[in-house]
Length: 371
Image (cartoon, rainbow, N blue to C red):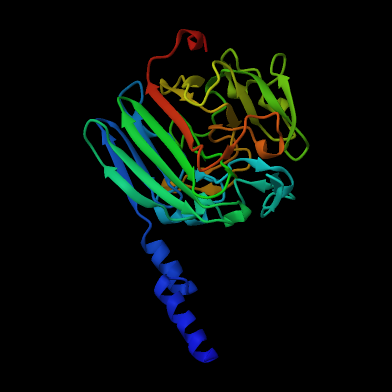
């Protein structure tokens, strides 16, 4: 009886694709690249990690260029440790002590950055195959929607979670809409897109001369392990003050501890999950490209690729620290351990929706004209 039972289990696992060799081969064979195109503006995405692979658009002279870091092959993303273009979740950014308590239940996560959890651990939403629910390559509103069912206990998080990510092209705009629905238990959710932007082109070198404005008057203070303390601080008089436009490299060397920017901004403006507000503007004077970021999220992580080093990317170009910048609209890091932060708890009655809208142009705003 035992032998029959074991044999049945093996046959079931093989048929389900869980025998390691066949599962891994099937996984890699199913990784695909999808293009959305609207005029001379196009993007490519892959179903591995619902990842943004390329964003191609003209500069001020009409020359097309790719402005996000990444790899030539979608299968290369299976070995990515920098989260290039990835959809990060179930909870993006850091969770202190790799643990939290929700409704009296203590949850222990997998630590992958010292004693803390970064981007939900060593295997999370950026490391799985997503399903393609809808794909319209061209036309008035090109779009693709990916879905993923995160199981109860995945990464240590409670409850089944149904997640969708949609990439939608408009006129010189890219919308990334992230939704999640808890199916049976309350759970923390903080989905984010981890694109690495270099408006001069992905292979144009560092971003120290790009000019940034961030509409956030405060940052969440961090301890020595980059975990929020729960307190806020004004950016005025500090290297974090981008309320007026500044070059990225202007004060970056005043931040030796992190080798650059890696901080969450508390975005100004009206609060509310349905309110889309301007979070940041980036200008590359050499190419003339401008990117404006709008979001309904309360926070924005500004990160200057401090830990990217000798990473061979598209066309064999080797990416180094400060070769790009990330502007990750998000909930505040470690919110689940700070009751004074906006809640990230999603319930079956309270779904999640995160909107990121990126508008591109070559019309440089007046406030940036003197750079």
